[in-house]
Length: 462
Image (cartoon, rainbow, N blue to C red; front, side, top):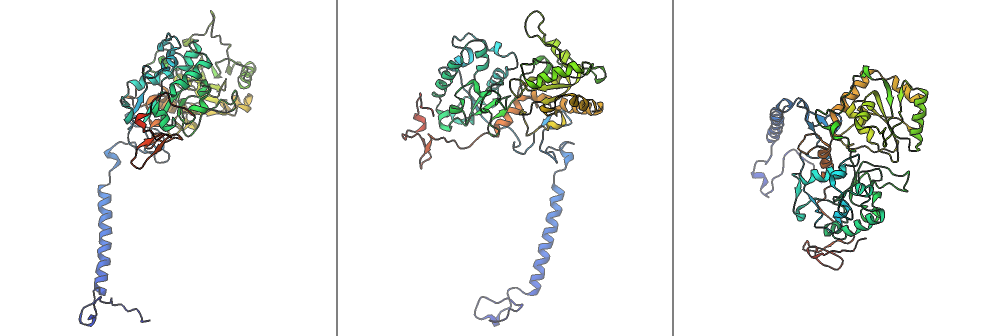
């Protein structure tokens, strides 16, 4: 085998009559050219890189965490991670006139329950979300271009008002779903349902059979105290805030204003019924031992001594910490109300799921204490926290509490806008189910090879 020399060999056979194609001088020149190119490229790259001063003094993307961020103009800036630079989705909202049975889920079997009635109370989100979507710029009237489909139902309200019983609710939901070709196309994966109470999707007894793949909006992440399993799935469902009194969430609210810390009478309070729950009973006993530190008044929600909404919030604002123990389920409206009277919420519900965890760091605005350690130790801990730390938590909570208010999506910060961001992360380009098939030409068919455009209700459900 011949030795390797420094001269490149020519391709032709008459190589001894020609200069080498690449001499040492050429090699050195090429290296200098590469070095110069790298230098000038780096220089220009630095020269034209956008400066932070060209935009805002606040970075659009937080450096340490991808969390919700407030600009100097007090606008809420959403992180790019998992969200993208802007909202871009289309939602179809079913009309109660196009689906037989939908009207009953909204107004009862006789159609006499008014939506305004269902708007009130902690379950009013079932109406608010529907109304906001009807006015949304992301609403589309064309099913074929929709990314997601919203199924309006005021089931919790209708049930409480006697408009439908549990059996009727179950039968009506099944009837409604059987008339939705797009639901069958995706197996329900692109359909949205709101269940605004602690019962969650269990209001629809057969939820596990029919909508176990659908997107469920609910404040409840755990229901295992009364059911074998929770209806909430971390990966597909969305936790939403409860419905706080409008008079407390709107700008310039006049119902009740927060008190300075120095004027608050109690260290902590718990305002609610015992409901036979261990954690709540412990708090009531603790208040009897330390009545000057913990307020747990006996609240009456009916009769001549019924506690009014203003009275309730005046009690709530009179402590530095608002205790939020588990009740019939893991979530409690008191957690959200605490932010609007500016007391620090203390979560005493181990299984609780909180909304918008992609953008909110709850360690900065609240405390979660083990429910198994409710006792004097809890009060001692709360008493040890300096007022300046409490003020800091209240201040940070004040900046994100707009996420608990069901205002228009046009507001830079609202529960509805946050829900839309969460929904955008659920959008799929492709749709399939066990009863959906496709052919070489891209057409979608059912098991009988009938094209999707020709599917007609009622359709068999799983």
